[in-house]
Figure (cartoon, rainbow, N blue to C red):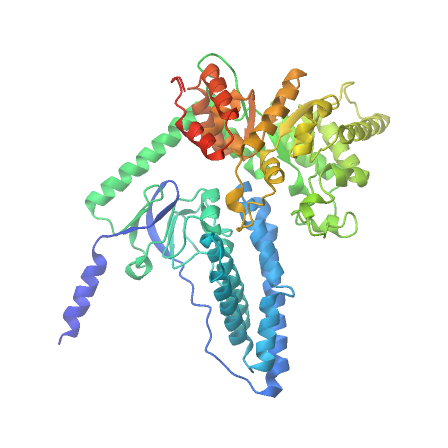
Length: 605
């Protein structure tokens, strides 16, 4: 008799409003219905085997490894359609997954457990992954967040292998209705890479933190998100109404009238802010004292062109051409490249497009090149190997095809500039110019009409050597583009994807800023156009400092342009110059950050 009231009470409780607080990850507000993406646990009953079954279990493990490598490889190939920040976060992680699926400690240990402990493959994988994770977590290291990430990476590969061994289905996002809010116990970075921001209104999970790979992926995708909401999935039912505030870090299940009103007001405020920024599109990017600042967009793939148009970019400051070479078994010929470049240049309707020639090497892996054309550098320091302009000068036929396509587009479609990656000495620019002029002569013999003056040929300044030799490189180059991502990495000897040293990656380190200043001033002395196209360009809080250092052209992800323009329109160049002088007197990154954060436009900082 007591059963029925208990059921009614439970049902009534589930119908009540429930508020959960978590970690704010992705800014924005979403109102929608729950789509439960909780994944069945990747667990299997512990199972022992007999000696005659050892070889069969070894073979099962080998098949699961092959399937897992193929799955991770497909995710790796999908990177080109993700935002740059998501690519930079996920690519090293997937590479780490692939390494663990090679002859790693995890697999060696699992095989040994099969042979010596007579464990089934899935049990052996689970035990070995847990053992390795436990060792990582007990290591003596102040970077506890980094240790947790490394342990979770090992466990994630263990779960993937277990699913493939037991034929347990993976989470699927194919049937997610438009406008849904995803709820899950946990979302892996690989799961996040499969999300479609145009369909998914928001994401909330029980597990996760602000410093994890998944959090960075969700921010890069621009999805309002809250992680670490304990008890959320147990309380939620598919179809429940939800108000998610990724800025405040709250999730309201089954919101009552008051919570719904508050949520709608927050959603409207967020929308108004976006509209306000959108209205800036047609306004000039001009400081209060009349100084024009050119805001351009970085372009990863042509599909981003509508975003660039909406943002009001004044041209494309960096068109990365790697997308043409990825996910294919052969190299794109001149005509194929011409079509792709022409599409982008035509869409910009007369605004200049800076096309960076192929930047391959280091962490990038293009199969069509690796297969005999330009084998990937496999030494202990790939970032210091044959990459960028070094590789192109060693394989000039690649550069010749790109130059031919770009020169034709510049002559027939619209204005272009050509950018050389990873330049370190003036002679690299000189050699590239000789190749470009040779290609131009060949095109003219083919009957292609080219202007007498060829497109400007620029150099990326992204190593300390290039920055310190900027005076000499400026004598050979027609313009500079300062790439602060690599510049900071090479200057500080820090790979920000490496968890043990990522906290040392700081673009506000005085050494990085001095190199930016040196390169900028070298260009300005020779009246050479100079832009900055690293992540610093899209960080609105750094805009006053960059303008104070003398930069007047910034190239960034399209989504960052409205906010940077809003900041520009409230600045006075004199104030910016004073801020830069104070910053450049400092020797501690912490003090520099304080000055930048404390800058108030119009105040005598």
